[in-house]
Length: 304
Length: 304
Image (cartoon, rainbow over all chains, first blue to last red; front, side):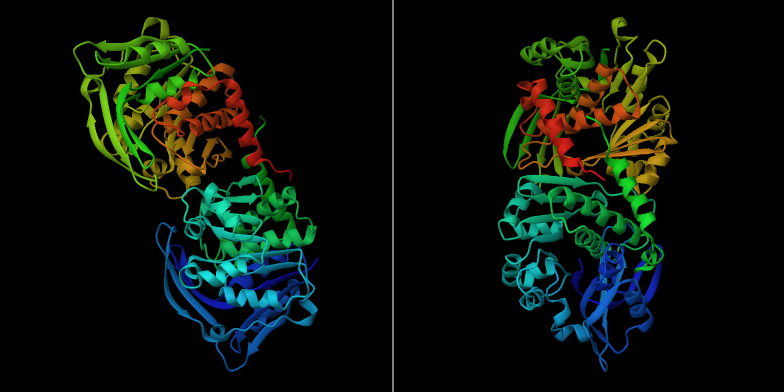
């Protein structure tokens, strides 16, 4: 089953206690595509870039199984640029610069060949733009997942609430879940958020793992303990890409399989933070991924 | 197998967003005893109280299986008193008052009948006092666990490091593990702490569960999601009491059984926070505990 992914293709400057990179290829679509193509192809991308985007990087995505028909190129425009510096404790970061460039007027166009796709990953974007992607789909896909952030809760809450009614899985972090629900307890927060529309909720907790909620069922996935996190950028997108890639590949949205998908997503995220940008993903093979998944299994295995 | 527990028997005033209690029976020995007697007896207590301590509460502890021979009563003294107010988000608290009273000169006396006990729980106290308990034991027990806090790392680090060389399990929270090791990564922190003496390390992460480290093995236990935490006081002591009570009862310190003990400790902690002081523990039976343990099992169960 193909996966359709909407998001950004960006250049990032990233500063962490372990070093810095400039003009590295990043953005949610890069991370989602790198992770999801480990499980499924094609991964159909909908995004926008300027004429300045690195052709070699795009060719590599294509070679891995990404379909770039939906990536609009604005030849005389500049690609989206973000720059950030992580704090010494890697717990927080400061945005140094954001240049929307071609993203400012992004009006996603879903190619005809993508419109019947059953697995949809809506990366973090203006909620109205995410909605415009859904508008262009043929009928109702099997599974629409959406990532968002507190920024949209602050400035576009009504649009966000509208799009939440049209999706199946919401993927946010614990702070965002608390803000969206107004609840401190993640259990109570989850109930309120599910009542807003998405049947399935995934709450990412960074170094503390992730929670999966569906109806009365809850699953708590641990995070792998890492000696060194080089660059946390893109961990959430990579998690989402791994999760949705696994679900599209297995075409099974039972709770049992959703749990497996959360672990595969967590495994992919545990790789991406080991290096800057998508570098760590570039040499990965399925054997290494399965080996890492087994580390998660050992981490949580207990006979009771 | 009996369990020997050293710690405080205190009165607390506690203020939380859900209410307040005054002069409630608390202190690490109360919580440890309430939890551990669900699994094993006797639980031999070493502590100190004033003549003002509630006889009915002590009689209840005795009825549950606590041995109070090692509880020194200073008839004309006042019992240790602590008062605190939890923040609205329950994430932090302010200490309003601490009156050491009889605890100021606490010199623990381990009764002859306790000295051959194989399972020892050293509740959070001055490290030198914890060491004096070990001094009085006959030979080398099977398992000595120790709880401590950042306060002792600030003012008695050398004493703490000395006692760490004489114990088997250190039980601390993530913030304390980072302070003690000077490391941000809990994986690196664990390696450094184990090198200080304890073969086994348990890092409590509150609402994010707990980590168990022994040699090259790691286990990540989730926390149960609770809609409402009424009073977090004593959660750590209750965790330790459940853990050590389970280990003493099963007399098995294999990694597999340590993992089970962490889940039993977590289950006990998930109960105690549902009401003030030890109230929620008072009506608990083993059936309810086993049922809650199964909720942990479901929370972390995945087939991969």
